[in-house]
Structure formats: structure tokens, C-alpha cells
Image (cartoon, rainbow, N blue to C red; front, side, top):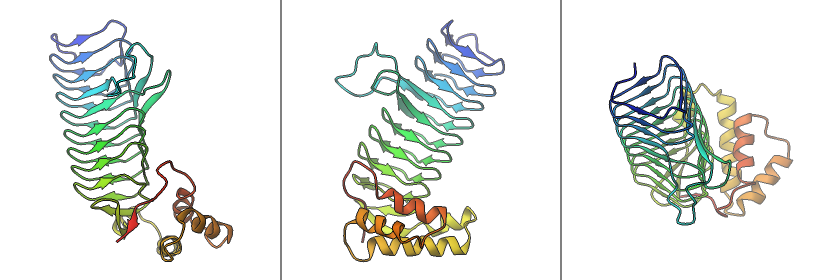
Amino acid sequence: MIHSQAHIDPTAQLANDVSVGAHAIIEEGVKIGQGSRIAAYAIIKKNTTLGERVSVDHFAVVGGDPQDLSFQSSLFSSVVIGDDTIIREHATIHRATQPNTVTRLGKKNLIMVGAHIAHDCQLGDHVILANGCMLGGHVHVGDHAFISGGVAVHQFCRIGGGSMTSGNAVITEDVPPHGLAYDRNRLAGLNLIGLRRRGLSAESVAELKKAYHLVYATGGNCAKLADESIQTGNFKSPEALDFLRFFLGGKRGRFVQPA
């Protein structure tokens, strides 16, 4: 049902069962998939694409211009939101900064009240951002990551898949996959509870623990230690290899360190 007081640009493409509340604004070039719901007073900015069964709650703004003084508003860029994602009240998601580029969220994400996702961010699937969480520009977040309330993540950081970041943490370095981050760039260990909840085998958990200790125990260069560990051929599980390969990339130069 589309409310008579909703404001929808004629060029927007909405599936026939999309629900739009009163005074919601849907701008030019927007595409919204089947079963999606746009609540009253929500704003979907130009060229944004929402998948199927996406929910955008009251006063959320999706696809707004980046908070970048050099950005030209006439430039074509966009936001793409995957199926079954929930965007709660007052959340903001900004479009990318370069021509024909995308700020992208995967499937089945939950973006809670007041969370902010800046330009050029890339989120995987099953990501949860809790209330008031802030992602700077170009942040990458892996599948199944959980970022708690009030967390601030510096631009260009990577938040590894399966990791958990505790409330009000300040993250200016990369968080490895399945890590437990807290405070300012501190690491408490592995998110073992999350691993078990997702059904990871005891053998894979043991191998991941071994990879973790090999990288962090000596206090040496994480990238060098990870590369040497991969070259041994002793690691077989996807989780352990994903953990080790994480240290071979990134732009922040360092990684969250154990307490």
C-alpha cells in the first residue's frame, strides 16, 4: 500500500507490493524490490537500490550525499541494499564518492537506531550494527560481524567476519576475523561463542585458535607471521585460512592487538 501523502518521483521503480508510509520521500532513479516496506517519513535518496523485503523505518535516510567537502552532488553514485535487511529509525547510509561506485550492504543485515554508514562502505551478510554505531568512509565489514552500540570505526578500517566489537569501542586499526575487540584497539581473543552458535566444528575451532596464537604469540610482524603460517600448509579449515589471509592486506598498517 502506498499512502496518498507519500512523495514518489515518477522515475522510481517500485515492485507492486511495496508499502510506503505517509510523507516518505522516494527520489529519482530509486529501485525497490518486492515485499519491501518504507515507513512514514523515511527518505530514499536518488539512485538507491533496495532488494526484496527490505525494511526502512521512520526518519532513516538511505543514499544521502557523503560528508566530504570535495564531493560534487551531481556525480552519479549510489547505495545498494541487499535482501531482507532491516534499517531502523534515524539510521543514515551515504552514497559513494567516485563516479559509478557503490556503498553496498549485503543480505539480512540489521542496522539499529541511529547507526551511521559512511560513503564507500562495504558490508557483507548478516552484519549487525547496534544503536549509535558509526562507520567512517571506506570501512569494510565481513559476514556475521557484530558492532555494538556507540562504536566508532575509523575510515579505511576492516572489521573481519565473525568478529564482535564491544560497546563504545574506538577502532582505528583492523579487527581480525572472529576477534573480540574492545576499548581502543584492544583484542580480548576469539569470538568462540559466535563460532559455536554458527555450528563450526571443534576441529576448525582448534585450528583457528592455533592460527591466532601463531600470529600474536611472538609479538612480531603480523603479516610476516601469517604468511609464513600459510606457507607451511598446516592449515586446512576455511576459517583459519581466512584469518591468516586477513593480515596480508589492509590500509591501516597495524592490527588490533591483544591486551
